[in-house]
Image (cartoon, rainbow, N blue to C red):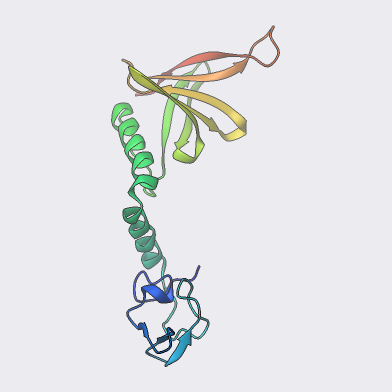
Length: 170
C-alpha cells in the first residue's frame, strides 16, 4: 500500500480532497476526476508519495494507536519483562535481549513478540518462545529470581524434552 504525503492518507476515501460529484459518484477535487474505489488510492492521485522513513515510522505509530488491541498487549508484555529483568527494550521497540550464564560463560537470547509460542497464565506467568536455530525457551519473569529455561531433547524418550535452567546474567 502506498501512502500519500498528507500524513496518513491510505485511500481516496480518507483524503480531504475526496468529495461528492453527482449521480452517486465521487471525485478527487484536485484533478476533477471520478474516483471508482474510495478504499484504494487512485492511480491518478496528484499527491506526492510518503517521502521518508521518519514519516513511514509515524504511520506505523498511528496504525498502532488506531488498533490498540493488536499492538498494546505485546508492548505491555515486553515492557513488563524488560522491567522485571532490568534489561532495555531495543530501540525499535520490538524486542529485548536476555543475557544468561551457562557452564561455558555468558550467552544471550532475543525475545520478541513474534517469537512467542505460548503464554501460561498462573500466579505469575510463563512465556514460551523460539530463538535462532529452532531452540525453545521458557521465561518466568515474575519468579524471584526470574528464571530462563531451554528445552533439550530427553535422552531416553523420543519426542519429549527436559528443561535446562539458567541463571540470568546481572
